[in-house]
Image: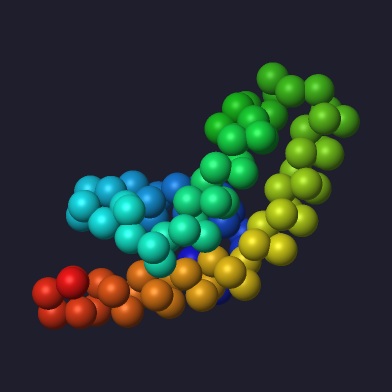
Length: 92
């Protein structure tokens, strides 16, 4: 997740799924990741492009790309905090 903002939304969602499975979904270091996940609800993520109007689909892709670019620095910080948390011997 720290390499680029490409596919940032689905990667944030996968990270939340993993952290939920570990029982850590409520940890404060995930706040930015949760915001990305929540903000993404405004877009038709997972909907086949052929089911959308072509102009709308292009606009949504542009909006998502811009959003991910803007959100990426904060996600990088959050991911470093998650890595530090998961690196602790007892994950306290």
